Image (cartoon, rainbow over all chains, first blue to last red; front, top):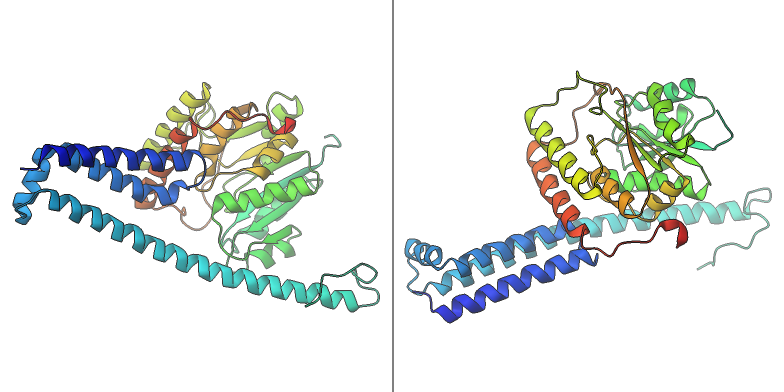
Amino acid sequence: MTPLRISIAATVASILLILVVLELIRSRRLRERYALLWLATGVVLLVLSAWRDALNTIAGWVGAGYPPAVLFAVGILFILLVLLHYSTVISKLADQNVILAQRLALLENRVLEGEHEPGGPFAERPGLPRR
Amino acid sequence: MSELRRIAIVPAYQEEAVIASLVLEIKSFDPSLDIVVVDDGSTDRTAASAAAAGAAVVRLPYNLGIGGAVQTGFKYALERGYDIAFRLDGDGQHDPAELPKLLEPLARDDADVVVGSRFAGGDREYRPPFARRAGIRWFAGLVSLLTRQQLTDTTSGFQAVNARGIRLFAADYPHDYPEVEAAVMVVRHRLRILEVPVRMRERELGASSITTLRSLYYAIKVTLALLVGIFRRRVVPAEDA
C-alpha cells in the first residue's frame, strides 16, 4: 500500500506542475504546442497520485512491491518523452536557422551588389555596414 | 467602389496547379484590388506561378504554417498602408465573386472583421464529414460562448478586415487554426466581428491539409488556447496603444 503522505505530497506536486504550466501559457511564455505534453504529464501523475487503488493495481500488474515506485517510473517515462520531443523541436529549429542565415546572406549580397551599381537603387544611399 | 486601398492576401502552400488561375480570377473580378500571395515555403512553382499571373509575392524561407503565413500578409498590408485586407485561401475554395458581401459591412463600418460563413443561413448544401462537422460545432459553440455572439463558421479563412483589424493581426495572430482563436481575440480587443453567409467551392485540387489524428491534436490545442486565453489580461484596443 502506498503511504498516505506520499500520495498527498505527490498529488500536491502534480497540481503545482499543472498550475505552473497553465500560468506559463497564460503569460505567453509557453506555447500551447509545447505545453500539451507537460499537461499530460501533470494529469497522469495527478491521477496516479490521488487514485491510490489504481496505483496499487498497476504496481501489482508490473510486480512492483513498492507502489510509489510506479509513480517514479511513470514520471521518468514522461520526462523522457518531453526530452525526446524537445530534441526533435531543436533539430527543426536548427534546420530553419540554417535556411534563414543562407537566405539573409544571399539577400545581403544582392543589396551590396546593387550598392555598387551607379544607377542602382542603392547607389547614393549609405549602405549596410560592411564586414 | 471608393478610394479605399484594398488588398487580397492569399496564403499558398504547394498550390502551383491552381494559384495562377485564382490570381487571374481575382484580377478579372476586380482589377483595382491588389493581390499579395504569401508562399509558405512551397517547394513547387507556387511563387513563380503567382508572380507570373501578376500578384505580388512574399516568399517565406520555410513553412511557417497557416497562421504565420497569413500574419505575414497582414504585416505586408500594414506596412503599405492598406485600408481593407481580404483573405482568400490559395486552393481556390473561396470565390472572389463573394468579396462584395464581405466588404459591405466594413464599408458601412458595422464591423472590423467580417467572416464568410458557410453555415450562416447561406449554403445548405455544404455537408462536411462527421468528424469535421463535430469539430466545427464544438468550436462554433465554444467561440460563441466566449464572444457572447452567435458565430457559426469559426474555421472559415474567407475574411475581410479593416485597418483596425489589420493592425491587430499584424501585431498578434494565432498559429494553427488561427481563425478560431482570432475570433475570440478580436472581441477581447473590443473590435467587432460579423458573419455573412457565403458560398464556398469544393477544393479544386489537392486534399485538405488536415488529417483526422492531426485535427484531434489541433482541436485539443486550440481548445486549451481558448480556455487559457480567458484568463489573460483584458487587452486595450490596439488603436489606443
